[in-house]
Image (cartoon, rainbow, N blue to C red):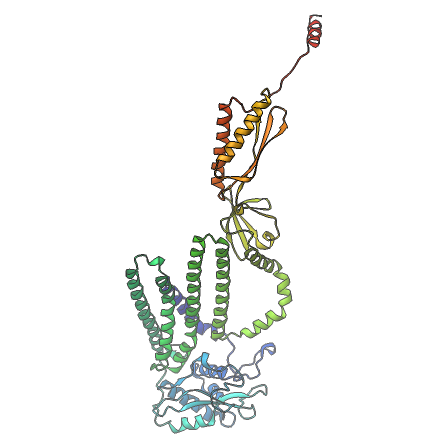
Length: 537
């Protein structure tokens, strides 16, 4: 089901596209002044001219479609008949260049070997395969009623119109329209094209399943194989991409109405962009997972955090690029939105200060490497283990098992104490011996502690101090200052316990006791007698 989901989502979007595109104002109608195009028939570029012609043919509005012929102003009735003949010729085996391959530049494609004001956009039906040419002319030559503006427009050339006249007798007359039509084409034609796409995808998906099954049998542990992981990530989206490629090859010659064929070829590009984005995202995930696993095995957790951050950023960029491409395929003008972003850039920056600050903080955390995922640290007053370093925030699991989320902009400006970066642990107990022992016994106790430290292999030699520090209120205080040379906190606790127990055992064997808080009250005899007499009186 995970493999079929992108296909089903694209099919659902494709089914809704006729309603989306039909929401536009009909060609030839007046539009608001704020959004009025220079040409009401939208013929400024070869792509927009062909798209407008297809919409008019879908409505079977041949008078409107006639405006896309160069002779529309001189003879609109003949232009309408030519539009009908063009649809008949295209339905009988002709084809048009797919939407995405048409030039969207007002000057057309300049590197196609044709004159600058001529563009090839398809082929007429019939055995001769005559090219359909667009010519760029001024509105004074090709402009229908109600047209506005003086920019040059692209219309079907007079040479193509003459070729349509010549083959009018060879091409059969158009049949009566089917009663069951969707978006200007018979339902059976849409079903044929959709079925062709699904069959192509099913065939390539079955082939990918066979390849993965064979690879699973070849490798005892396929999850550990780079080859298997590559094919596992690549084959599902490649199945969709190859299906789209096959459909573009076969669908352009399918015996269906040109409206259905051209519309499907236009919007099937959505499948291609989805497949490319899907493929790229799965490959990024596969490579990132492999790198993270290797870096984790080598204890390079900060590098693993950088890989995770880069993976998320790349996936966001890929999804943004795919979204722009899909919107462009649908026909939405994204240049206006980009220009609006440029005009409102200052306002956007002011409104997104915290977001930008957090992104910069993320880069700072990854580049400066004060912590890594898995480190035990203290950030401000938060103490816990780092679970994730994201693009916006860092999550810390506290000792109470709660999760504290700190925005990276705030995180990078706090004081960070990383306990996991310690190479050794301080051993600095104060051992109090009871008063009443002699100086020789005290020196013996100090020597016992020094010997215990010297005998232990995980105790640092420099520094290693055992000194009488103070005459405390209730004990003779011996201060120990050295380091336990292990990097792991749990190991250090075990060694600390081992040292303390050894000190206690050896001191007890020597007859030296550990002091505990006590007080000695000394009453003078004179004060005692006075107190007794006062009591008798």
